[in-house]
Amino acid sequence: MKTLKALFLDELADIYDAERRTVKALPKMANAATCDKLKKVIQFHLKETEGHVTKLEQVFQLFDVKAKGKTCKATVGLLEEGDEIAMDFKGSPTINAALISAAQKVEHHEMASYGCLHEWAGLLGNKEAAGLLQEILDQEKAANESLTSLARASSNEEALDESNEERSVGTANKGLGNLRRSVRPVGIGRNRAGSILH
Image (tube, rainbow, N blue to C red):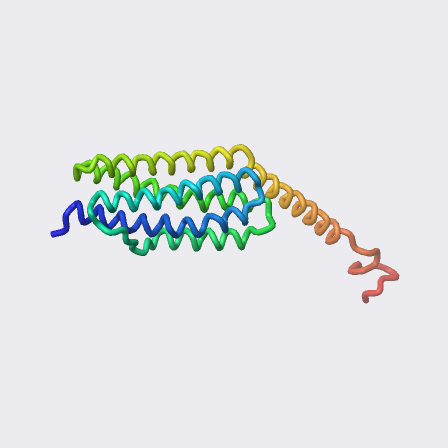
């Protein structure tokens, strides 16, 4: 029978892999961002994430286990989706809102993981490990809040403005198309004297 400790260590290996992958992915996200504030938020969280990797290694040590990652399929999928978003929206004002969305998906996954790990470490009687995991969880929550604030302050509005501009241009073009369809040269398609149609 699998124990809570076995579950804890399995999830710890999963999030360890996730954080190491995120360290590699965040510089790409920062480069894809066109908003300086978003770049700074991502770069700041990169330094925190590097610290998370170190703290997780300490948690492993506190359980007398060598730090080892287990492929985190959720993070692999979320980061691949982030890469696709960066390519699909490159050069568009919508890129920053798209990147924030991708980053927040990763943050929410990490917050759920750290919430469970923190509780389990406490139940397993390892207060020091629980404390380290709480520190990471608090930083993940703060990063998510920073992304939310930035999205509300500017990125979502920029994306909306672009959508409104496209809609306005589309409406104008549609109106021109209707105008073109409604105006016909005199005599064409009309059956009257002098018409070119018989």
